[in-house]
Length: 325
Image (cartoon, rainbow, N blue to C red; front, side, top):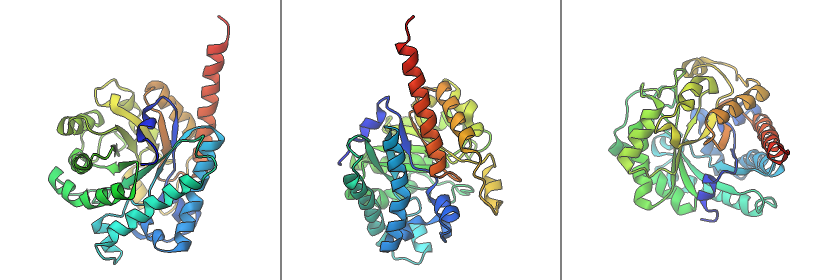
């Protein structure tokens, strides 16, 4: 590991990148069946497209002196989704390795890397549909299914593994178990519906507690992603035992529900400035939130607005501290 992933647990604000797949589909006009961004890793042109995407966020973080977490383009690079693209099972290892190498090389070549801590996160997505998961996996099924991808990401040198858009505590537990067996730091990010609960109905606070209890608190921290701030603001502002473990959010630009987004023909980008203000409101309600980025419908414009807002808030706090009493 080139970067100590635990630097992310300091009080320093960290950005993440935005909605990789929706950005590539709607901004770059690419065809990505199943949201399978990993297919771009197979060609020099595709890797160049991914680099262009990631470099925007490196620059935003550097310009604002913020840390940065970059997720590999592997949310769909697990066995079932790779097979749906007509690829052999052994491509899982190769694609995940390429994804990590792309980001570690970007970090090494970036002239801003020394002043902007960059954490390379190996991204793992749900086995089923993140919006309509259907049958829930048991923890054992999840560990067995995701284990190969976790090994590939860890062997390639990812600083940590992030399980993004998790729809149930059991699948999250299985991924944590796979990471724990290797001694790899892991982050769990749950998605929630408009009522602030997981798709299976479990309250967010309870889901975090269930994972922690089953894994002896192994996850480095928890996140919420793929939901608009208004969908979970009351849940994340509560003072629950599980909520205290949530350090990051990656929000959708749209207020639409998952079901509505599934049926939508056009992207709803929302308002970047309004979304940034909502992030800051969530942070004021829960000061533990230091890791912020985007999900569906967001791009570099949303993250630039968020970075501006974080910088302004930090400057205002510094002025308050420096002002005579």
